[in-house]
Amino acid sequence: MSTTPFRRSRTLLLVALSCSAILTLGACSSSGSKTASDSTTKPGTDTTAKGTACGTWQTQYVGQPKAMKTAEQAGYFVWTDVGGWHLRVRDAKGTTFSGTVTSTKDIPTAKANPAGAGTVNLTANQVTFEFKGTGDLIGFDLAPGCVPPPDLQLRFDLQTNGQPADPATIFTGSNSKANGSAFNASRTKN
Image (tube, rainbow, N blue to C red; front, top):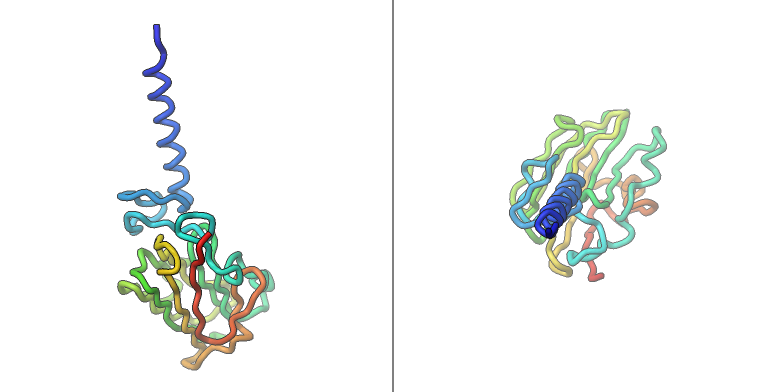
C-alpha cells in the first residue's frame, strides 16, 4: 500500500497555505494573486524592501525612522520595509503636508493610513497627497511593484504649507534625513 498520493496532497496543501500566509503579509509575489489584506493589489506585486529579484532599496530609506518614537517630533517620516513604502506626518500645530510621489513605472496601490486621514490620489505612476497635521502619525502606504533594478525609481516632492519642506524635518529610513524637499529612491541589484 502506497501513501504517496496522500503525502503529495498534504505537501501541496502545506505549500498553498504557506504562500497564502506570505501573501497576507505582503511579502510574496505571485502572478494573478492579491494579498488578503489588500483587494486592490495588482497581479505580480512584490513589496519586499530587499533580497529579491526586485533588488534592494538604498539603505538610507530602509527601516522605520527612530525619530517617529519621539511624540513631539514633527515632520515627515518616510521609509520602506517588507510591507512597501510608508509616509507619515505629524505636527500638532495643524501644518498642511502635501506633495507627490512619482514612479518610473505604474504604482499598484496607495492607501491612506489610517483610512480617511487625508487625501491620497493614485493615477498610474503618481501619488498626490494632502494631510492636515495632528499630534498623531497619519499618512499613506504604497506598493511600488516589482520591477528589476535599475528600472524602478521613486521621486518624492514634499511640501509644508504650500512651500518646499525643510529637509531637517524629513526623516528617512531608520536613521537618515533627506538632502532636500525633493529626493529620489532607487533599487539596486542584490
